[in-house]
Image (cartoon, rainbow, N blue to C red; front, side, top):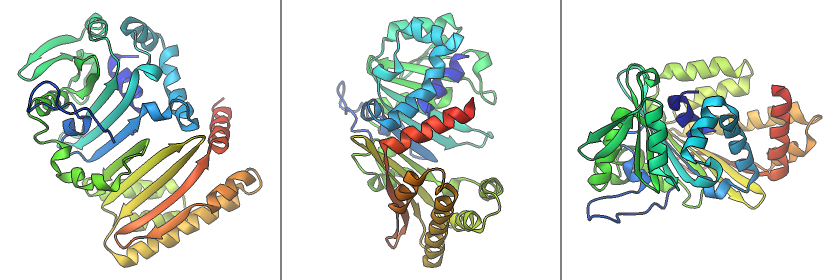
Length: 333
């Protein structure tokens, strides 16, 4: 596994509000992870690792990461850096920005406890090259790690902050760090204007600007959902949704989950509500014999129209999450 493949897997093994540390070194500087995200990001997600460590949802997230420690290169990289993702990472912010080059600019911001010297040495041993930029140093990853011809990069800002992603995204984030977040999400532009829709206590959340994605993507989703009328209706109604918000909040052994779609069209909101109810009914019928406990969970989900969009909310007990995880693992064998 290359360093390029390892870093996204570490961040996603998996997506995920940071009440980040504000400027500590100079008046204009900032280390708030959201301030480092570009204002024109098309997707922003946060994962609060510290909330998830002891939760059933966290068990599933970390299970996805366990493959890193068993992979040859991944295991050696972790050993060389002294990094334990389960214990050393507290929060992660992922952003993707649509570019005109056929792929997204990706930036991942990690907060936690890092050893910059050991991580830097491990990167150099894997042919990364230290670059001295105007706003801070970073490591350019080797040529085989390029994405559409664009190299990846890692910036070890300090013992508590690390940046990874495409080189252009990392360099720009270092600039926002030095300028106090100028051009960043916290300036209130783009998705930054929608941050109030996120629960400050959420353990994980994501904002997606659907206007930035081509209609063809929805067409592909329609093909993937099959031929049932309810699923097709949901996909059709989603074409009028400009913003999607996803949230998960850990409460002891359970997780509250919600999704929200912003649309100003009342007719489409009504269609979306009806379609979501149809999908829930279809799921209940499909699992009523195999998973009767999950049927009662689905009955507890609420679908509402607040005049701006449609939301679906519910609670997943830890027992259900563990059962779903066990079922997925059994199917993977």
